Amino acid sequence: MDRKDIIKYSLSLPDTFEDYPFPDDNISVTMKHRDNKKWFALIMNVKDKIYLNVKTDPNYSELLRNSYDYIIPGYHMNKEHWNTIIIDNKVDVSLVKELIRQSYELTKKV
Image (tube, rainbow, N blue to C red; front, side, top):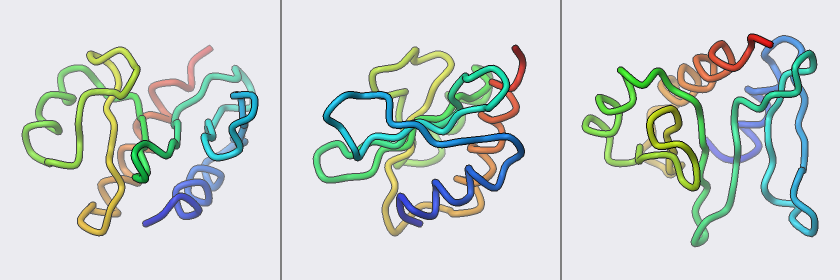
């Protein structure tokens, strides 16, 4: 899974779009809802690695961090509600998609 795959999957969710909110940064991208403009995924390049921030249920966040070494507390985010997935060749693609979908659902409400 790479950056393009994450964007493609995120755009497959209903009523979403990609946004480049940071001036002079055409690499970091937020995936947002059309209706409420809230973002449900942030894709960044940090130390030459792809970091994917997703919102998670606080009761599930700690379990994820303890179960997968590529999931850490949200990078520059509220650590209770956000996790960062460091995308590399050992990530479970189905888990990444599931977490993107969960983040999408958690941020869907206006």
